[in-house]
Image (cartoon, rainbow over all chains, first blue to last red; front, side, top):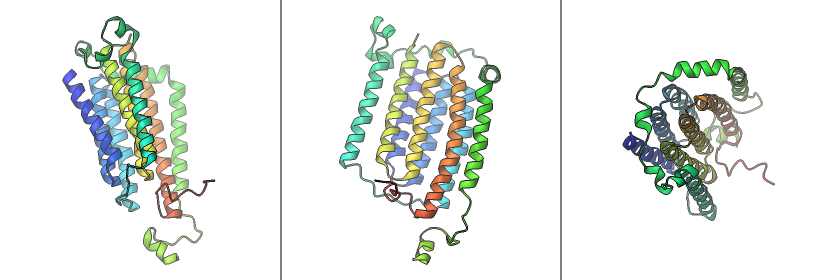
Length: 193
Length: 102
């Protein structure tokens, strides 16, 4: 189990770097799909199979398909002339490295771990996952019980939020009849000018 | 209270969040910035599930459920906004839509 955690952790980080580094948006989107699948595997390793299923259905399935549709329908799959070498990129890299290293330092120096004498190596020490995931009941029923008893109010608010999002997306995507030509993209721009 | 695998997953979440934050700050394509935001949300999801597992509760998984619902709503509206911006500016490069810049 520890081997699986490490292997999929490395794969997740590699595909996350792929999201940031690819010049074409479509390669970036495919890399994000891979990252979402690996995150679903991490959910499975943590015993959250309901969330793993939801992750693949909603995130990797619906949201990423929406993103790929927008990229392909608007013709946005152009290579960007992105260079990571300006001063802004260096500052951003410094900030993000500082944040990650600081968080990892805080997390691996938990008081209990320091008392046991294994502070910096706690990330790679023996995992207790093996004995805790052996006999688990399905999380679907338990999460459902929680969702409809203790978190009923946020559940209803979330459904209203989704309604508002649907209405907003439909209103935003309408064509305004003000003089924008029928086609879109570069050809239409050349028609106007 | 915090077990070993929780530490590993919190560290993984921190690294993913850092990578996502770097992408949001550096990339100039709106859709790639949006995808890096989704990456950051997933990093937080991992840390929520890991800590809730470490505490022996299921509340973290319910939180992740709501984060996913909000992310789906945000994806729909955000992509509609990107489409509207593309319709008027014919570009989704963040340097080209700086009309509000002082």
